[in-house]
Amino acid sequence: MSQIQVWENVLKWGIAQNPELSSDSSNYSDDDFNALKNTLQKCIPFIKFTKLTSKEFLNKVYPYKKIIPEELCENLVKYFLDYDRNSYKFTAEKEHNIAQHTLENGESTGQDSERIIYWYSEVTENVCEIAQYNLGSCYRYGKGIEKNDIKAFECYKKSADQGYLNARFELGYCYSNGIGTEVNKAKAFEYYKLAAEKGHNIAQNNLGNLYEYGEGTGKDLEQAIYWYNKAAENGNNVAQYNLSLCYRYGIGVEKNEAKSFEYYKKSADQGNLKAQYRLGYCYENGIGTDANKLNAAIYWYNKAAENGNDAAQYNLGRCYGFGIGVEKNEAKAFEYYKKSANQGYLNAQYSLGYSYDKGIGIDVNKEKAFELYRIAAEKGHIVSQSNLGILYEHGKGVGKDLKKAIDWYNKAAENGYEIAQYNLGRCYRDGIGVEKNGVKAFEYYKKSADQGYLEAQCGLGYLYDNGIGTEINKAKAFEYFKIAADKGYSIAQNNLGILYETGKGIEKDLVKTIYCYNKAAENGYKGAQYNLGRCYEFGIGVKKNDIKAFEYYNKSAGQGYLDAQFKLGHCYDKGIGIDVNKEKAFELYRIAAEKGHNDAQYKLGYLHENGEGTEKNTDNATYWLQKSNRK
Image: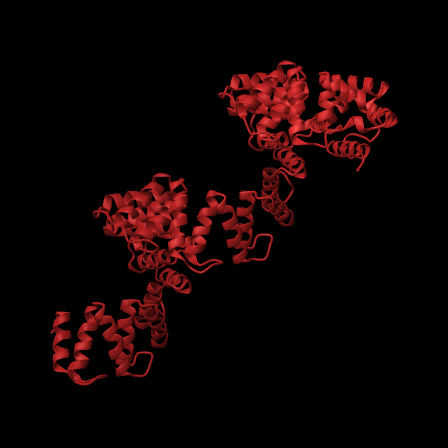
């Protein structure tokens, strides 16, 4: 490719980055030239202008003279007026600094790295600010020479002191980040300001940052917005992203989600990964746009995720995990969680742990779940802290350790996590890893219930119902059972039915009793299935119906409910809702008796004594009758 083609392509690219510019420079204002100059400022020094013909320079380059550094442009004009390549090289060797700078771009050197550094050094000695800047960049990034931040800083300083725009920016960056010098935000502010006022858009954005956070200068949100706007107008995608955050959260401007969306879009279109992720989030949740557009959300999440954005990878995992905007695919969800977690994204580390814990998109692996929960928990992820406590409590993926379980429940509870508060309450109620303490159990249940956690609301009702950690208060028990029951919590529905049946805390109402038991039974709760069996057996709130009684006892017993196992045995024993079957009665009594059911132990002893459903066995009869403490 010829040098004129290189120039034309660079120019075409620069104009494309500034959509408001036409291809005809004769219509450009000073602001237009400045915008193009800012875009191409790092490209210009590497154009081999001396490879052009005089006609090419005059027709293709000179109309854009305002975007070329003034001194370089002046020397190029002299060069083309007195064009002699050999004498130009001769001039360089005689220490003409502009000629040396031009030669480093490839004139008769073959782009040899060592020669490039040589000419930069020669030019630097002769005080050419562009070469000093370029030599600084070589030291900064180790181009053709060993990386040396201190020397980079020195070169940038020399160039900046002569007013070179890019060097002023780089010097500000060095001061801001402690590159080749100690961090000095005040100095960073000074040099960013010098470069920003000359139109350097990255410096304008960084100056906005310093004003926003009050670093190197007093905090001034109005000035932050001013400089973000200047940089954004000059096409800086980071400034556009920063403006979108300001409008999103009302930082220095009135909150405006539509404007926030607009700036996210501008920045995302230029490839800013954070903006692409945020834009996807806006489309998903209808923020700043008319409605949620899930296809657009997935598109932008994909764009950012493909380029390694950890937040976008996590959100894609979430979308695949729950079927948001895409067909549900747990294997893909796992894949994206893993990519994001490997980059240290906290929510992804938790979600990956949860996937291993529950076998979502991958086989269950409690050890890996434990490890990922631990990593996230140590970073303060409260759900991971709580889940880590659960693994320690039950000894899954790690050795059982109730003390550590309590420690992690405490951490999560202190951070306000309602499930951890409930678990702590449960531990204090039952004496798991701590001394039994009804008052503390009540305290933690109350904290959790106040945050709307259903199990805690039901549990609080239970404490009021039984006077654990507080005085018995059936009205309060009814209140909390009803709150949880109305939200579909089956245990609370069953307990509410019991209060309606007994008339404690509320007026007795058998119609509502049966309604509550039915709701809980439909949700599969074994206690409610047993209670419905009992109501049908004895005609409580319903017409007596032995067949239905048997049916509900059978459902409940099938889930291992102890009283139901005894009652089902009794049905087989006495032919209630089913034909008499002493063998089945014996088997069910045996199951319940071995779990400590007193009546079942007595019945089992009776069957052994009389040889019903089993062979007669006096020893077994005596054993079970004595066990039951009944004659």
